[in-house]
Amino acid sequence: MASMARGRADVNSRKNLVVAVLFLVIVGVFFYFYSQSGDSSIVEYGDKSLRQLGLKGDRDVSESSSTLIGGEDSAIPKTIPVCDDRLSELIPCLDRNLIYQTRLKLDLALMEHYERHCPIPERRYNCLIPPPPGYKIPINWPKSRDQVWKANIPHTHLATEKSDQNWMVVKGEKIVFPGGGTHFHYGADKYIASIANMLNFPNNNINNEGRVRSVLDVGCGVASFGGYLLSSDVIAMSLAPNDVHQNQIQFALERGIPAYLGVLGTLRLPYPSRSFEFAHCSRCRIDWLQRDGILLLELDRLLRPGGYFAYSSPEAYAQDEEDRRIWREMSALVERMCWKIAAKRNQTVIWIKPLTNSCYLKRMPGTLPPLCRSDDDPDAVSGVKMKACISRYSDQMHKAKGSGLAPWPARLTTPPPRLAEIHYSTKMFEKDVEVWQERVDNYWSKLGSKIKAGTIRNVMDMRANIGSFAAALKDKDVWVMNVVPQNEPKSLAIIYDRGLIGAVHNWCEAFSSYPRTYDLLHAWTVFSDIIKKECSPEDLLIEMDRILRPKGFIIVYDKRSVVEYVRKYLPALHWEVVTNYDIDQGKDDEDEEDDHAVVIIQKKMWLTSDSIQVSE
Image (tube, rainbow, N blue to C red; front, side, top):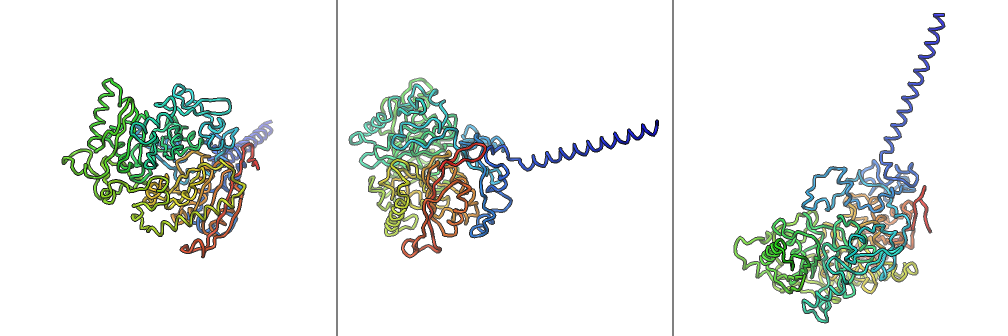
């Protein structure tokens, strides 16, 4: 009996040991797969096993950008995962979740949390941004100025919050924009005409016979002010942060109105000095007196000689003690800045800047704000802190008593005075205009029946040089966001002097825009440029897909080897070739070192389900 009991005990021990081993094996397998899928929360659709074939990996940037170009195809993914639906409006460098996760110590009072904070490469999403459920191809311009599909931007809180101000109204499947604003409930068109009337502009036209072309609208809301300026041949850079009204710029771009996500915080805005004839703030809730007037001095940097600042706010007319105090202090500040009141009526005051440096030089010693140091470059903007000082005019502007620009539209093709600053001659300028007109005509002939009236509205030139691509589109009903690299800010000044708009940007990072906001991206030697900077061309492809609308177009003009490399990614990105052709080097690119080619691509309309579905 004792031996039988010991036998049963041994059997039980062995059973317990087997169970324990099996348990440990199961736990080990569980932790193994958990560790291999640490980023699984970002992908809901598509084959998750393909995540490891995404555009991020263990190889370094130099390998991905140089070795792979012209190399083996084995590193090219056959598919790229799709991000979770919750990321359908992701702006990587303006991502609040990133700020929370990385515990950045930011000064909220200075709006640092609304400035750009980009993820390091290891924290970037290696997936395609999906459209929201029910997404439709946007309404064509010009109808889009007044209405958009609700499904494309499913946010109606502004319609409720601003219901008494006519910002927007929900009507069935659409969101309608009556043209109102916080200060102009009865329409931006009437408000704009009243401003022109205050300044005695001919025919109450805000363009002042072509002398006013470029406007900066800060705290723009849904950009109705900028939208209604367009009919007067005036273009506005409508600026607002990704704040509590976080979809306002998204609405603006969906409407086909030029707009940019940015904030008057601690850094200079990404525009060169003397870019705008007119700045506007209508109930923009900005404390212009903070930090010795540094925000107003940033506007001063951006305004041209004789430029205007229209300010519509309670401080300009209200009679309670706090508003009167703010008005007194603001009036004293702008007087020390040599601004004068051009007009004041009801709730709006318009100041005008001096034409020369004379007033600055006559101020008493020690007057604040001071003049900026002589070695300060007012055109340096990338990562440059705002400065509480007055940027004086160049000797050329001071002697000319103004910017010396031709009225619009002549200024588009007239060599501007600042051209000499980038070592361009008049002959080089005229040749650039001629070459790009020919290239753009060729692009459009190749696109042919793919383009219908109103289908292309928001265009981006990703490496704009001096803006001749945009100038060649003058007869098209489009607007162009001209982007220049961080190391070429002076060329952006030429772009603004031609009556166009744009921003300085580094394509090693994501652009400050919502997904699905551009109809056409023009990438002239952009890939070659970022490869030189040892950044990832694969990351750029995913970024281009993010900001491009479904059915939108991409034109890649680059070295033939680079163009071939881009083409290998088309199936994974759900892009297709419209046409491609080689460049006749002797005719078009006599100064370029390598053979070049062009590929024109269209993004397919794809939907998300358990797997990627492509709508042909």
